[in-house]
Image 1: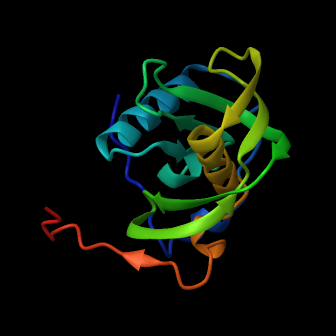
Image 2: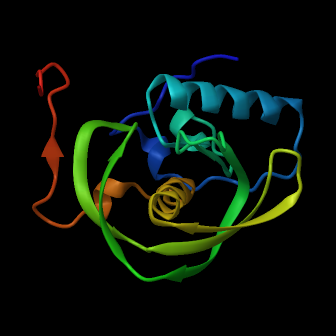
Length: 161
């Protein structure tokens, strides 16, 4: 496993649409493992392959609960319900946070890392994370969806105690 370089604001790849995954092979498994390790290193909740420079429809999410990392290959949100105003950040936009409107609940269909079809009904933070990462796969970034006037820059060197 390896830590991959995260593509950041201004990198054109972040605006590109990712391609469907046709074959689940060893190369994809290595990418998934690297994405999980990279996400954990930077304390992220989710990471899409495009954020590490790979235009493939795969994402990983970890809510740091007892369930471990979720892997979604070729995810498709098939249902949304409700709205929630949430604060979001993104590993590709370091130290930037803003409020955004996301669905309160989503249903997503995808393949797991073994190629098995799965359907996840997600609420609140998991729903938010799925929407955020699927946006990445579609070439969309949260900064384009923020509620005007809510963008904040946080200086990581400041002591917030």
